[in-house]
Amino acid sequence: MKRKYFAYPYIVWMILFIAVPMLFIFYYAFNVGGQWTAESFVKTLKNLGYWHTLLRSILIALTTTVICLLLGYPIAYILSNMKKSVAGFISILFFVPMWMNFVLRTYSWYAILEYALPKMLGLKPMTGTLGAVLLVLVYDFLPFMVLPLYNSLSKLDKSLLEASRDLGANGVTTFFRVVLPLSIPGIVSGITMVFVPAITAFTVPVLIGNSNYQLYGNEIEQQFIHTNAASGTDFSVGSTLALILLVCVMISTLIMNHFDKDKEGGSIL
Figure 1 (cartoon, rainbow, N blue to C red):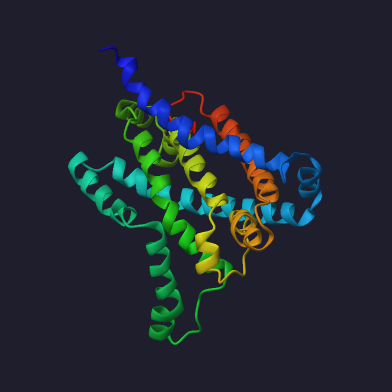
Figure 2: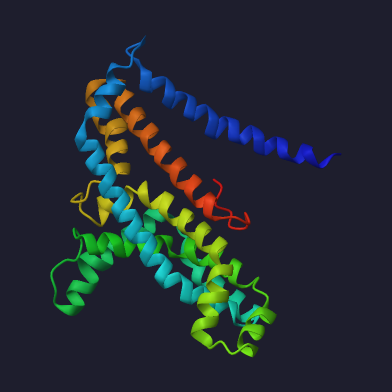
């Protein structure tokens, strides 16, 4: 049996769960009440409120990504300098929370920030703030930054570091002139793996933010579920918002791929 046959199930899966849903989104964006029209599409694009929500989501996603990078790089660098067995064991412990359902983890953080910590420290409930939303987003997506960074840093040729020291470079110079440039593929992949899901997150803003921070994912969810529950089956607005988000994700992915020269980062979605 040729190896290409093993790709057929994956191709079928992509058609059913990626291509077909995308066709439905395109269909509902330009089909209202059984009639093809661009009126609802254009009207949605002209609504500045949606663009403000998208901008807020991008800023929060960028903040989450930067924090994850600042925290994840030292963690990945330390792990890459450990023995493989020790690093592997610590990595497993680091990713154990990821085995739990995303919604359950979010509810756990809600209980911690709303009841446990305020009671222990004598403070007011911490939910409903931007800081709490960012905290939980960073907690949820930090492993997705650490994994590609560790994968990239663990592949570094140690002889290059020794050569740098032999040529008189100190630790700081070696890091910025050797280690950091060679880890760019991991950085690119980590940024993509954190930024893309962070911009579409809607569970965390609802539970942790107490709906005080309406993000783009919440807007899409509201248009598809809550709005249409009262107005019927008009999915044009939600589909249009989903198309806008798709374009933003594609642009960010193309930018990341541009910097991923060696194609080692896995930033292609």
